[in-house]
Amino acid sequence: MASDVLTAGDVEKGKKVFMQRCFQCHTVEKGGKHKTGPNLHGLMGRATGQAPGFSYTDANKNKGIKWTRETLFIYLKDPKKYIPGTKMVFAGLKSAPDRSDLIAYLESATK
Image (cartoon, one colour):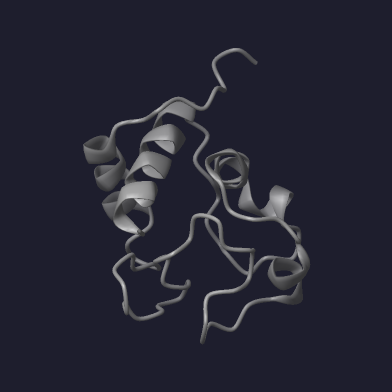
């Protein structure tokens, strides 16, 4: 589908998406605590299921991919489809612009 395309995204719009949809379960700052979900600092380029100190499902640990803009774009649309067996209860972000904005924010905030 042509409208389901990853774009550069807008960091400020992505921060709003994060605060509305992700903040309840995740932190982004270096040394941030794990909540229901893992701290996301250092996410880009990290293998799935590898945030130190977080208890992941085997499905996350064994997925065998690295988080990139492209893999996050697919994952965030439907986490349970991309990683069957994940304990992440988030239903996903169907909007491609929202996912692109969120990824732009995560790239900026998790360095």
